[in-house]
Image 1: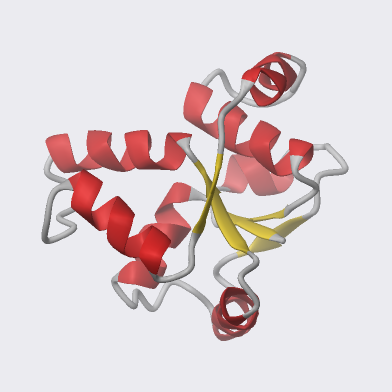
Image 2: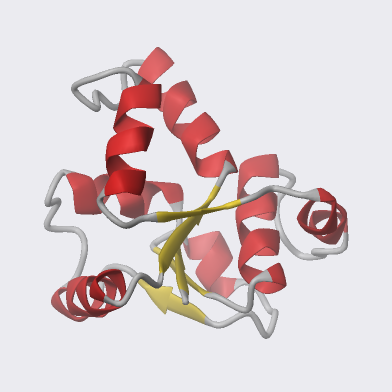
Length: 133
């Protein structure tokens, strides 16, 4: 299973060229197999971007979320296990969304697809893939 960082989900939805060819192929093949997920916190983070005028999903965040889920995206819960696991992630910045997303990937044994340099450079065994490749 792969877990998309928030910006990667937005890039995929908007066909942004920042998603590299290999990453797009990886995501597309996993999507067809029903193995592409996001952390539930991703939708909160998207709502924050909408409020700041940095992303326009073309509908309400709730409607956009439903469209994404109906198209095959999986939403992984931010449960107590992931929340507590996020506390133990030394070396990551204090940004709670990044910590929850990383913890969700760890708890669900997923590869994190991101272009966030801090997450990519983080010294941890979590499998990661640079979305720009």
